[in-house]
Image (cartoon, rainbow over all chains, first blue to last red; front, side, top):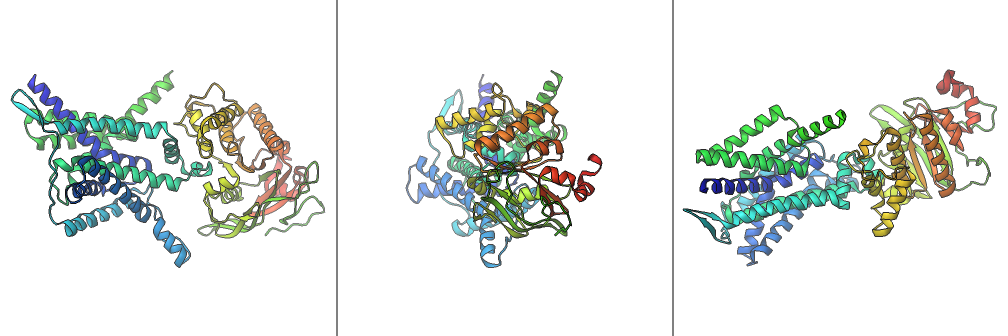
Length: 313
Length: 266
């Protein structure tokens, strides 16, 4: 019974971590075709903004977290305008040399990786220069729940709840709202969307802002449980990329399913071996197996099965 | 520019004139006018100094061999391509450089050559996409329902667009473009791959939208029977230039047009 509870807690913990780590990355990659290697550093922005708001400005934790999300979303919009869409350099180019200077990075996977990798280096070093090698941490709220001889952080349970709520909200936004319809249309065929009156430029900007805001939310939520150092983002990157690879093309369903699968793998292996290192190794092995046998991820597989069934009818 | 001698007064070799108007002879208001429009792709010139005009409420067809620059010209007009040089005037305003969504707001919309309904979205979501840009609440619902009914797709509202037949997808796409209430609707091969019945339905729909709602059309089509059925006037593009303009009868009778395009069909 106790082992079962332990496994369940570890599953919830891993699920929350994977989903929260991957959501922003999956949205930006799935919709814009941009691989954001600075995703971990966007999480860093959220974590630092939250921590600084709480410790230096004295904001209550929920407000500090909201500030963390907002700061990261705005930072993402600036990055999108300057680096991803090239709007700012092109605006300057049109007014100086009379032509655009750069092409947008949408659907240019390798180019977007190089650009955002450079950005991540700048951000890590920038944080080190500005804040030093570490900053004071916020205390973890809510205390613990005890069962038998074990106890578990209540806050970790809250994170699991938030990750489920996040998936529901993201699903609602992308499937039930005007913005979601615009996003899905832009993703499927940008040219037609523009000719039907959709401001695809604005759609991309907002999508990147939302993806960045979600990274900021991850940073804000994990700020009380991580040590605050400039490299904290790298802890999320492996899980985030593995989740996107395993999840496949469907952003929300892919993130949910890969969160479930990877959470189960991680929790089971960690529980059996009593070692988080083996848990992470199991995650990477799962990614390798997924790439070998499900190159389009779980949702690509689900889509293929559905298509085959429809053709058979 | 192409030059050609002809004795037929209804043909104008690449000379912009106000169309006489098929039935009434009253149309004089220019809606769209391109000026020396050039589009180059690397070393290839897709459109070469094109002066192309369309009047309000006119139904124009654009024909020519493959590679003549027809789709390029429509893409330049709607703004999905930007010209290498030249200007595009619409309703007296210079549109050159504007984004497609900004041109939609001025009254131009387009159905592309490749069927472009959104297969993953339902018929209702497809129909809602253009309308949601400018209508809310009850007004939106009414217009979405009207667009679906107009496309002959009542009862298919929740069906994924990918499950529709090719003809139904074309109808839906025309409905989506028309629901923006444009003054000028550009259609790139709207009846390609359709049956005769489906073709007739779309011809009737274009004529109705033109006559009842006053929408001007520029339609690219290879099917000369379809062109003859709907066109007020025909423009022939050849090697990126306006080669001839005139009535379908005059175009079909022109030996140079037959040589470069219509061939043995006549």
